[in-house]
Image (cartoon, rainbow, N blue to C red):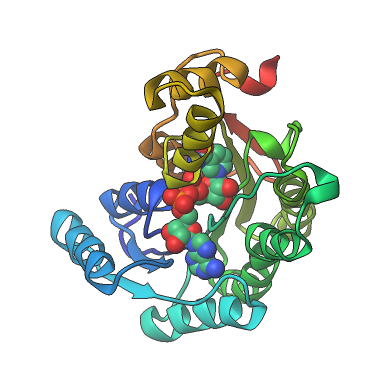
Length: 260
Ligand code: NAD
């Protein structure tokens, strides 16, 4: 269904981004992977996607902390493939602390990676998508783009900002063949969340398994983690013709978290 299309997925060497990249590749899209990690592990991911799905996959290590690097990621994709059809702004980090103790450098890094990188990527990709007359921009926000939680000032601010950015660009691009949406996952068991599970286990002196149930029990009524591929499935739907009229919105994939 996405054969001939090129998808750039930021932060796709792990977790949700990798799940999204695999689902888009399974639909036939060529993939630009991005993210940190060991070269050998990244190469295994890249070659695995090519082998499993018969598409082209490249990895670009652009640092999402830096606006110029994000713009360079999009420019390199266009140079390499001659086009960019799908941009998934997914790279993200987390840090938790009460606001009065929140380190300023962590605030700056979270805002840069979780919010500003999307601005730069969108600004770089939109002109090319407009020339092509079609495009899909999907911002991976969070349930924390819709509701708050304690100790996550930077993350919640960045994700709410990302939902706001989604609305504005959705409006600006309306009628051009380009849609812009946010996907808002609840808990997905990735390295980003493993750290929070480990923190709960240490704090409450309970097992990792009990800590994981604790985490789910507090927020996610389904009591099950969302799978990365399920976020990927929502992204694939947004890339399908059935979603042509969905733009500027935020879709929760959160086991009921934000229905409460
Ligand atoms: P993860 O830690 O598994 O993956 C994060 C990815 O971002 C990795 O590929 C990492 O290399 C990349 N990355 C981090 N810093 C980078 C940088 N400076 N430059 C380039 N790449 C960088 O985390 P995840 O849980 O898969 O998170 C992916 C996105 O989903 C994030 O935006 C996160 O906020 C969001 N999210 C996660 C959950 C969850 O429960 N895991 C829930 C809602 C939203």
